[in-house]
Length: 542
Image 1 (cartoon, rainbow, N blue to C red):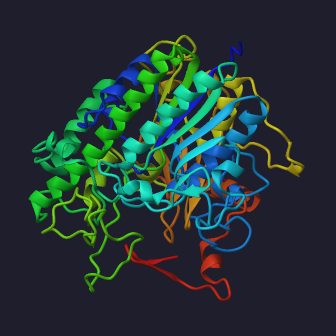
Image 2 (image 1 turned 180 degrees about the horizontal axis):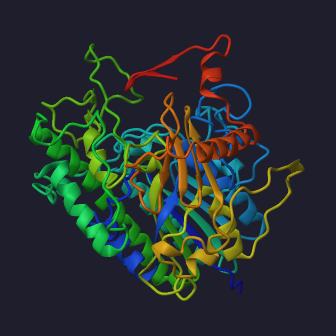
Image 3 (image 1 turned 90 degrees about the vertical axis):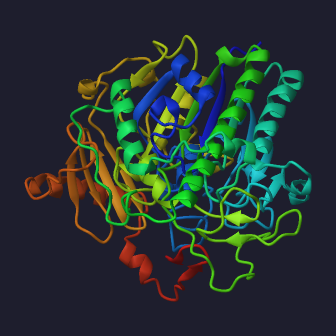
């Protein structure tokens, strides 16, 4: 019998750095907390600042622009921005399937520009044996559009009473495990579980929301202070770091209006996470019942930081701005953050907005930015007997490009130079297995061949981290420089004090950007014939 481990990656959507209980949050996540207690937590792991680029990078071991997803799944320009997963890339599923693994995907794909016509960027064409989920990036939890079973659209299944997308993702993942252990006992499996929770819209079963009634009444300022205390006591944060102040667009809780509505927003958001956690518990139970939990490397993370986006109510009520803009009872969906409409039900479509300030404690900014609030993600790794002391914390920096080499090392698999006759780009990351198996303190980050350079770019927002130093810019602003060992909350800009360091790191960034097909923001805006796309949610998107 094949002794190689199974591999499971569980990815959630738009969840902030500190929302989980095991990272200091108030949200009930007992199953993920137990996974962390029996495994390890990585405090300095990074995603990309947005969902589609993160998925492309994680699955290929490349930077998003190299994989073809420079911004989102739209055609946003020439090389590096077609909005499709490139053919000169190879996915984790493709590599592992060639090595004898069965491969399963439950949940969100978001790596194909064309979601209406079967093409070679759909999951079954990129290495997965089974797929149930959505091709699109977001949508209703009660009636998600682009819902697929394999290559067949099955949106009609959402009309069944009791359908809730988070639960459906869980149920398919469990069925894959059980079917595999009945039909493919001689093979290991790779399972990618891609929840859309807690991405907007704020929708959750009422009984799940009720458990949080009153939990967030103190508001984001007070709760953030309480999180900071817990995170420091846990050893996730250094007590010497100064928490980031509110950005200019986030009001204090005292001055904000519509408090009851805002409290409800956070209650629904928390309910979405708890429902996902319960599903993860059911998946872990299925592994345990099959005797496979100890033989499975499990990685859990979020695809970017908390999302502060605001959905503006449309001035023309009744205009359908979202796919399938009715409920299964044929009621119209009211799009937008209406303070007189409590979120949670299928006929609402809202965001939690300013609460992202709490979700991203203690960092600055949010999804779409490359300051820490946009790219810092909690990473939990679980593999009994293989990852060192249970419950320990790792502070070594890593990013999504590292997951492919980590998984391949665990599986004993080799990354190819060619796949199906096409030359593929070489890996950008490195295996985290040495990090997983060695306990490091916050003062030990120069071990394990550090420093190295980590890079990000999204819509002109850019950053490079070298060891403890991070150069970052909020486009079209100037470069900022921070010493993350002393100031990971990016509170003390050192750029004017150390212009030589700014010049050196910006030069490294420019070399990386040229090599990895990053197109300068100004150039994208000036592409001849380019048309601005108007988003029904957030105004002009470029």
